[in-house]
Every structure is written in C-alpha cells, then in structure tokens.
Length: 115
Length: 112
Image (tube, rainbow over all chains, first blue to last red; front, top):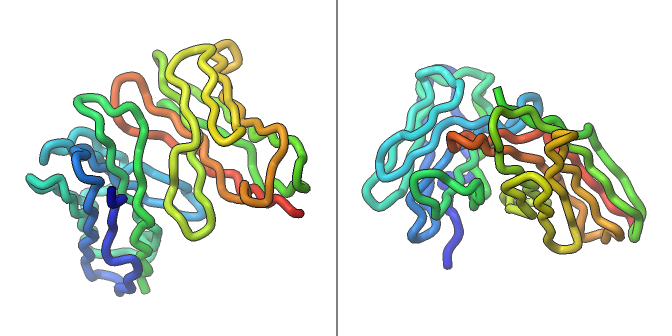
C-alpha cells in the first residue's frame, strides 16, 4: 500500500509569491491534515479536511488555505509569501471517520524556502 | 488550550542504557496521548498511543503510561539501540476535535 505522497519535495520562492503544495493520502483514507514544522515553533496544525470539507483550522492567517478533492487528494496554498513561511510542510492522512483516532500517517514533507 | 510539554533535548546515551523522555500535558476532558518518532530522512510515524487513563502504550520495546493524576505520558525504554536514534514527539488529541498538539520534539542519539 503506497504511503502519503507529497509534492514537490523541495521548492524555493521569493517574498510575495504564492505556492501550492499537493498531498495524496493513503488509499481509503478520507481525512487529510496539514502541519507546519519549523525549528522555532515545532509542529503546528494548519487545517484538516474530511470528505472535501474543512473540519478544523489552526491559528494561521488567511494567507494559508487548503482544499480537498473528491478523491481525497488535498492541496494547500500560501499566498503573499513571507520569509517566516519557510518551513517543512507535512501532510498526514487518517482512515478515521467523524472523529480521528489521532493515528496519523505522515508524508515526508515539502520543504519551502522563501527568499 | 490543550498542550503538551516535553523535555528539552538533545539526549545522548550509550547503547543498552535506559531511556526516559518526559512529557506532561494540559487538557480539558480526556484527551488521547501519543508518541511519534521521526527517523533521519523519514516522515513522522506513530510509535505508541493511549486513549484513557492508566492505559499503557507499547511498541518496539518502548512504553508509556497515561497518568491522569500527574498529567504525564513519559516515554521509556529499558535498553536503547543505535537504531533508536531519532526525534521523538509527544502529542495530544483533544477529546472533542481533531487538532493534534505536538511537543517540541526530543532528539535522541545513541552511541555504540
């Protein structure tokens, strides 16, 4: 069974640009969550999608957005990039239903560098 | 809000030493508790979990017990191996939503 796949793995952008990251969950998993990982702030929850609906949202500005497609694949978008957005963005999928069990399956992440 | 606090690293041990990584939590209700591990060059993976008070999670020789009275979920292993070198994250899932809260991570290095 293929794991969680994130693309691209690495990317470099400049301030003011926007970026779109993609995540393909494990087959059959309907919940997809996104996290930002930085040395200073650690792992921070961005949002969670289930059946194409955002179920939970973390404390990030509106520049961070996401969506989920009918095949459970998800994308996140960051507009008007800032230097502080440089981070590893992790996607995690879960097989759970209405409430996740907390058993998350993570991808290897997309490392974004903003210059 | 709900949160976890884990001991600062890095931790360096010799092979076969005893490992403890402390984790305490603050939460309303009854959260679920987890330890995730990130091996070099890999994504995070679930190591063990406990969903209610006094539950003991265990996997690969690691153990952690959900202690409600001390709001703790300390990770232990009796004899570490070089292959256990990784970053360990304590995590909490609140009882009423799917917003996982992670600790800062503790880097463990095991020397032969």
